Length: 230
Image 1 (cartoon, one colour):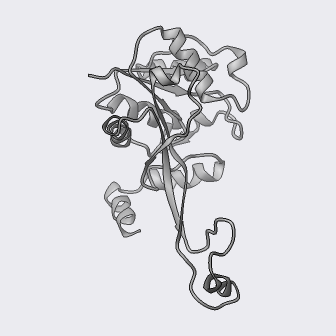
Image 2 (image 1 turned 90 degrees about the vertical axis):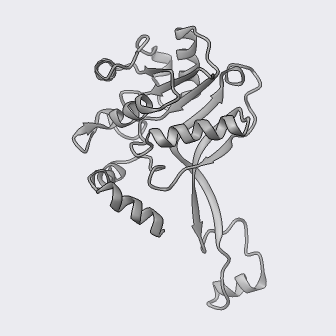
C-alpha cells in the first residue's frame, strides 16, 4: 500500500565521459538497462527521467518513460547533486508519494530484482534513507594502522594478516521516504543495502564500459556460477 516514484537523472555528458548515457552496451543504449529495470519492478508506480538533452528525452519517451520537461541549466552543470535533481522532479510532478527511488543510469547490471529487494529491505526495516553498497574483502585493506604486533610483523614478511571488510557505494540506487527527503532534516547517515558485486558495477570510465561489454554478453548461468564461487 505504498506509492513509489522512481527518478532517473540523466545528463547529456557525464562528468568524465561525453554522452555516457547514450553509449552502446550490448547493442543498446546504456541508459536503457536502468529504464527496463525500473519498468520491470513489482513495486514502482511511476517513473520519471530528468535530462537537459533532447536525444535522451526522446529515447526515454520511446521507452514509455515520462520526462516532465527539460532540466534547467542550473541543474545541468558538472557535479550537480542527484538529490537536487530529484527534488526538482518531485516539485514538477506535484504528486504525493511514500517513497522516492533514485536510479543512476550507469548501473546496467542492477536489475528489477535488486530494486525490489532494496524496497523490501527499506520497508521491512522501517528505514527512511537507504543506499546501495558492495562489500570489499581483502587481507591488505588496512583501516588506520596495523592492529597488532603480528600484523606489523607481516609487513616484514612474518605472521598472518587480518581479513578486512570495507564497503563502497554500488548499484546506483538510493531510496528515501518522501517525507524525510523533502524535509530540512535529511542530513543523517544512509543505511546500507548490500548488493552482489556483479549487480553493483558502476560504469565510470571507458574502461568500465569495455569490461561491461564483455560481461553483458556472458550467459547468465555462467555469471551466477562465478558469483557463487567467489
